[in-house]
Length: 153
Ligand SMILES: *[C@@H]1O[C@H](CO)[C@@H](O)[C@H](O)[C@H]1NC(C)=O
Ligand SMILES: *[C@@H]1O[C@H](CO)[C@@H](O)[C@H](O)[C@H]1NC(C)=O
Image (cartoon, rainbow, N blue to C red; front, side, top):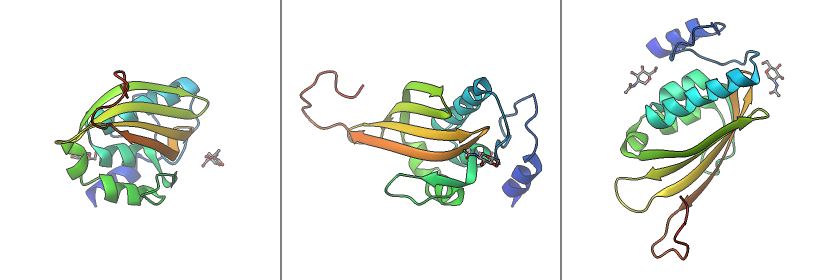
């Protein structure tokens, strides 16, 4: 209740001062440099602050398109899956790389669960203006005795 009021009141305001609780959706026109900054903010909220609810509410379009095979489209679905924070907050994330160009941003990171081998993940997001509209990811888990000493990271 409180959250949706907050977010509604922030719609339509892409002010010069970029408050961290600002919503960037629905999309507004921004430059590519601003898109890069906004994308970076999203990555910080998600993987550094580990607040998926905030990252999704602030940055994701309500009708955003999901290509992960285990989840359906829509921001509400994503918040339900990730927003509880239970899974996310138990993971340790290390960002290996991040980039943005041509309306798409990627982030490559290591995800270490509380036990077991780590995962290498690349998330790719398409933005329209200020707002994230679409997501693809590739996920690969480390195995025991990997042939390549440089494997994954
Ligand atoms: C996550 O973000 C939401 C929305 O901004 C906020 O209400 C909540 O307190 C944050 N959770 C944590 C653990 O910081
Ligand atoms: C971007 O958003 C605007 C405003 O909602 C919409 O009119 C336009 O069709 C969208 N473009 C793309 C490529 O999604």
